[in-house]
Length: 495
Image (cartoon, rainbow, N blue to C red):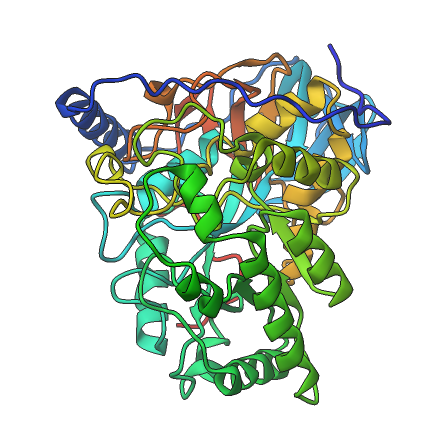
């Protein structure tokens, strides 16, 4: 078993070919997706809760912990044999022992226990576009990818731009999600309800360039108002950083991913970050500003100079304009860059200079993605493959394990103030996933998104066999065991 993190990142991994040679006609894929969705609904139906399977022999009783879980435990960048003692009533880790097993004991042997990932950037399409995804299918995908919490983006239908829309979306998540959840408020020209929204939302998401939905904001004065409201509430502002004026100047018809790259260049990212810098400089108190899905080293350099947080997605790290993706399966915003640009971005991430890993899970159906490229929607699924893909890169020695794990756990938790999770330490929540630590291949037919496809089909990945939320199994032996609605709000809420 290769459990230890490597100390030096090597050269960037080469993109793997993705299988996109399927017939343009997709009745079979749509039928498979429908069958998959029905299977998820059946698996997530409420059922009598079963006790955890006892794997080891009972040894010790404990008044403050009732479950012990043994394996190769990740703590502060290292893997070492250990046993988590968990109080399942509170869902928290009581202690980490070297050898003591309790009455209720799960022994995973040489399998690796990693903290559950927190994905700050998902589009689970509910309400309004549930033919693409919903909170049940999206959260199920998350659980099967080792993700135990997510924050949903506001560009739904209706958009999350009012207090009522935010509360309604949270209620939907509460009734369906199998992992923990939160939502972003949409930052637009309408800011009247923003202070109240920030009492129930993780922060604000603002689009400085047009993308999916109609949340574009070009008014710097309104951006200043959004930044001020977030600062007062102590919440972060997440920016889709592509300057609309640059996109407008370059606008023309496009036929493929190389065209898309040219029409939404790194300059658009940099200009948007400069606009945000000027807006921050004009207000008295600034919030934490996070640049989502940075797709170029130019964007990282500009954001770093501005003292902004940055996030990066697996598709920008592992795919580029040479990827063999047919139709619009490789279309997203910001776009895939050239192989050289992708490799440069990988090196910055591997050096630990991008603090947050996010999926930007944005599913669309095959019918939508096989439309004319110019008209096809932007976005790819990714919440289920985010951790598995990057863990395979760590196993191969391309990036330090700590860089990957921290970027998906403690760092995103810190950004939204979720101080109760992100590490396998006493007092924190027992959210974790169990990995066999042997790479397999991504098979899009085995994934759980309603869309039924993946741009990473055929890539190396390390998927979890079990996922635990607050000490209780959500997914066990690659089967969903949690009921719909078993997830809880990441933030304390009074709706």
